[in-house]
Image (cartoon, rainbow, N blue to C red; front, side):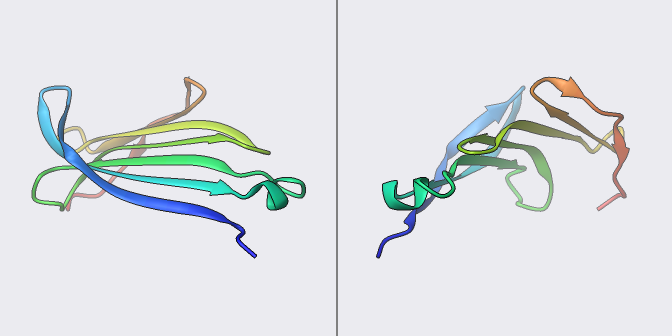
Length: 98
């Protein structure tokens, strides 16, 4: 019995602001049979610097049984990460160097 489908993709280099970034995406979708109990339709996107040692942006969209639209933006120069869900920001959190 198939419960769903997951796909992971390495996308072409893209810019976040003016910074070229690696872009990785993950999509999760439950099958129609599992949808009866708990539907999952999630899309994750992660952007890193080209050296793959710092996150630049992370987003998660859930449109199944639970609804979320999360965005986390990492500002390594300021040493903070900014989180929002449905464009409602929370207080920035400090991220340690490296």
